[in-house]
Image (cartoon, rainbow, N blue to C red; front, side, top):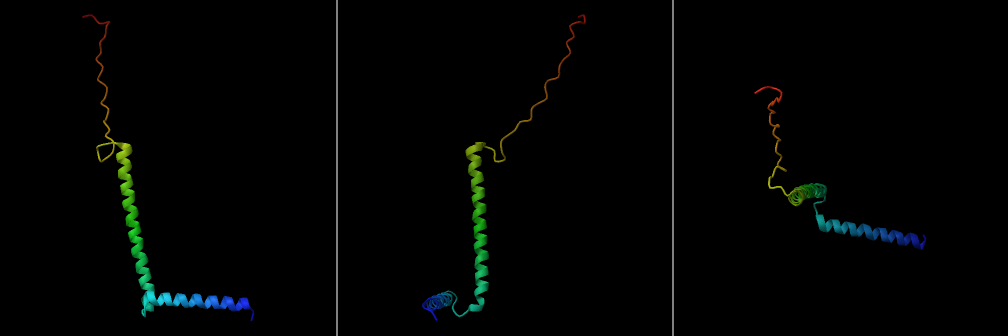
Length: 97
């Protein structure tokens, strides 16, 4: 066995031992519950991240509407419907009065 094989085997065994010790500290004797705990934690983190992103989008929309739009109406810029042009009265100049 060469020296490099021995060194790589030693480094691998040390990394395995460290991973096992870390898992023992984090999860204790309940190794069967580890996967359920990890999934529950990831799901909760996903919900929190989604809520923060939604709040950020709503906040950005509000700020950009206030800065760029400058409208006082919460429903967007007010638009007025143009009234129809006044009816033309027929003023016939050729008719006698």
